Amino acid sequence: WKPNVYGQCKSWLDMGLQPRAVSRDLDWGIPVPVEGAEGKVLYVWFDAPIGYISNTKELLPDSWETWWKDPETKMVHFIGKDNIVFHCIVFPAMLKAEGSYNLPENVPANEFLNLEGDKISTSRNWAVWLNEYLVDMPGKQDVLRYVLTANAPETKDNDFTWKDFQARNNNELVAILGNFVNRALVLTDKYFEGKVPAAGELTDYDRQTLKDFADVKENVERLLDTYHFRDAQKEAMNLARIGNKYLADMEPWKLAKTDMPRVATIMNIALQITANLAIAFEPFLPFSMEKLNKMLNVEPLGWNRLGATDLLEAGHQLGKAELLFEKIEDSVIEAQVQKLLDTKKANEEANYKAKPIRENIEFDDFMKLDIRVGTVLECVKVPKADKLLQFRIDDGLEKRTIVSGIAQHYKPEELVGKQVCFIANLAPRKLKGIVSEGMILSAENFDGKLAVITPEKEVKPGSEVK
Image 1 (cartoon, one colour):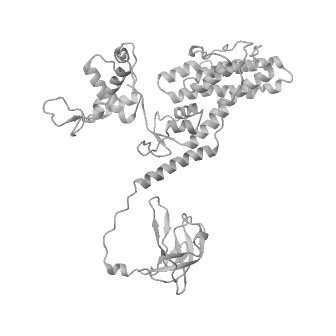
Image 2 (cartoon, helix red, strand yellow):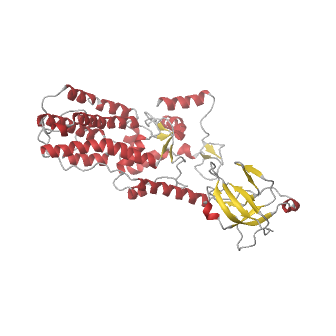
Image 3 (cartoon, helix red, strand yellow):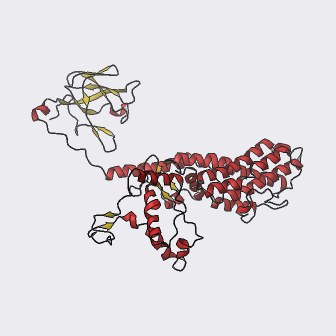
């Protein structure tokens, strides 16, 4: 088992905690086939993993056993941390008891991925739906794959945010990977009519650059084989960083004025790095690497050639250079965030339930409150107080000052001239150095927004609320 998963399961057992009971007292489900267990059914997650087997048999009726029983088959269970018990103890115990099935060789268990700070929930529609994403972000399948891999919750809970999505696209896919590929192909087209130039004598810097990515295949393979996909993708991106640094340091656009043989060597190395990128990123960005192969005018070069420095022969004609990725603008991201906010508001409205009524009071207690209607003469924001507005109220007797915490719900100018209901006989109280002579009444909506209470028709200032 993956060490952290095995350790967690073992620690539970060492503490005397047993896996969750395998039966439930329910009137639906699969009956427990044991004498004395009448009325009990199997807990759904006890028998649910068998569905993996039955699904394979349904899809591949003639070869399903190859996937589950062939000694050459490597069984790996990719799961979330909430299913560790079932995939590390319960399901393997069932397979072992039957005897003919392979046990999982590894159970890589990820932590949870949240969405904009909240738990992903399909029932609450708090999710990024793939069909909607493909409509809203056409041609950006690989961007989502890249961000989800880069942000994979391999060792701790992580959070998917649209701002991070935008940043990773613009700062990594566009500015690092896409920028290098574009420069390598465009410069080759400009100086060598789109044909791979032959490399001349290498400098020490050239040899060091080639050495810097000589072990890329070994590193990416090791990380993939141990299910560290996030780090494997970082290793592939590091290759693009090497290419960008090489071109920035060599500045072939300056050398083109005086030393074209040197430019030819630089561009040959840049193109070999580009071809390596087409291999290294294929597991992570398959659609984009298919596009890159067309730009390089090659068939897929094959994983075994990753790290080679002779992937493109001198004289090979490249295809037309295109942008691999495009910048995502703020307006696109704001639309996605707003969609989620609208979803949250709809959920809150649908599930709204008024707060419980407070305990009863005597009628005489209520009669002690003197609730009046006043006209707002002036309204200003209280300095250095985000929530407070200062009102000057005509109460029908004399003008009074009231401070109210509704600054986040109204602009001062919206309230001038309005009539509001207020409690007139509260003891004066100082707020931010201002004596407040009453309390303006507001209703709090389900979303926390406040609405001041006003009379339906205009009445004289000082009118009592009965």
